[in-house]
Amino acid sequence: VQLQASGGGLVQAGGSLRLSCAASGSIGNINGMGWYRQAPGKQRELVAMITSSGSTDYVDSVKGRFTISRDNAKNTVYLLMSSLRPEDTAVYFCNVYVVGWSGRQDYWGQGTQVTVSS
Image 1 (tube, rainbow, N blue to C red):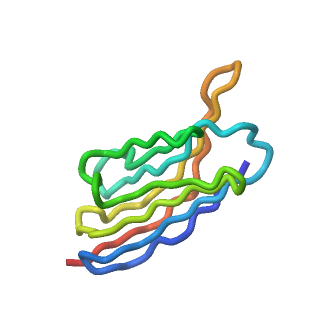
Image 2 (cartoon, rainbow, N blue to C red):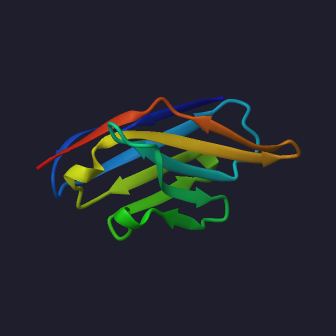
Image 3 (cartoon, rainbow, N blue to C red):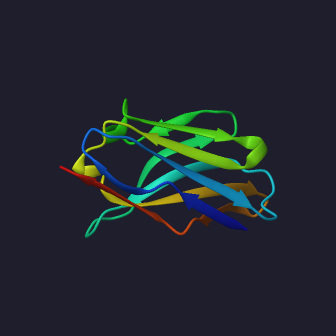
């Protein structure tokens, strides 16, 4: 199973970026797809998650600014980030999880850097 993330970069405060992450390989039925981020010196945190039924969850700091979506046919998850702030600067990791008879199995992408300048 491989997760290929793209779309990070440098943007000015107030700008927008869209992250994409495509899952490939023998992954089975994906339950959840999402994005985590980790800023220097901080713990990794969940940014947004979307389930197979379309239910979404966001960390409070991005509500109203970020939108997560997914294309089930392509096993791809997107994160549209708008009104970006310097505090959004972090490495963003895509995450996919599958829940099977043995429990939850998580898969991670390689991380993509998002830098927001003030």
